[in-house]
Length: 105
Image 1: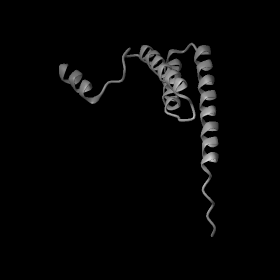
Image 2: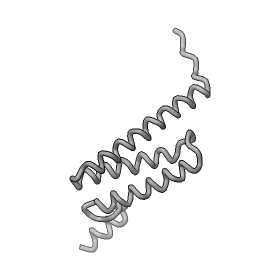
Image 3: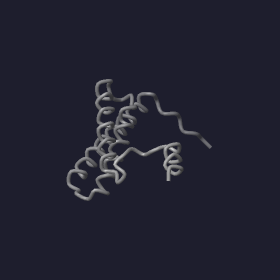
Image 4: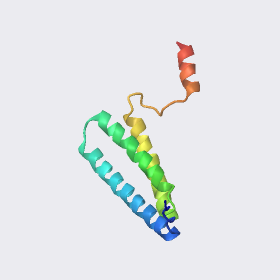
């Protein structure tokens, strides 16, 4: 049984660049869907996904520092949008905060 040779570093970088480009295009499509959708629950889910995508993009080496800094800002902006659309109107809370609320009742 023969094993496949490991891809060259250049081939891996090209694959990563194609994956990053696909994620960027998918994120643009999600942003378009967000603008065309008026349902608050759907907009919340879209905003969360867009923020996660930008967080992923900002970590990728195939983009330059300036692009990754912009992705980080966009991730923060979309996260704030998702928090604003959230029925609780706040960021997801941790266990400690939930326990405090439980005992305050």
